[in-house]
Image (tube, rainbow, N blue to C red; front, side, top):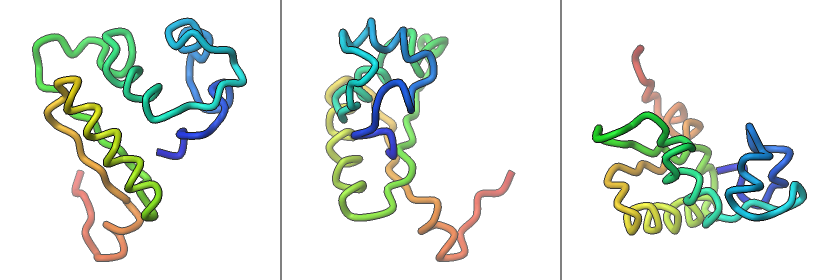
Length: 102
């Protein structure tokens, strides 16, 4: 979630490919819509998923503003047929003593 509002070149791996896909320049500030496009692109984070279930975890929802952004993105992802979306804050999970076992 910390990529929202940041410069594409500074936060995006393979930013030149993202620039072409989003039709923007490297100084473009990423929007929620941009991230949803990348998250649903077959060459993006969905690469290689095929017919399997696809899960998106929107992490770093550490304050009310970030959580609101994540919830908007969750709705956009659901509209794009992504059924499994989770909005979390690892800081909050750790605060309550909940840890994910490996």
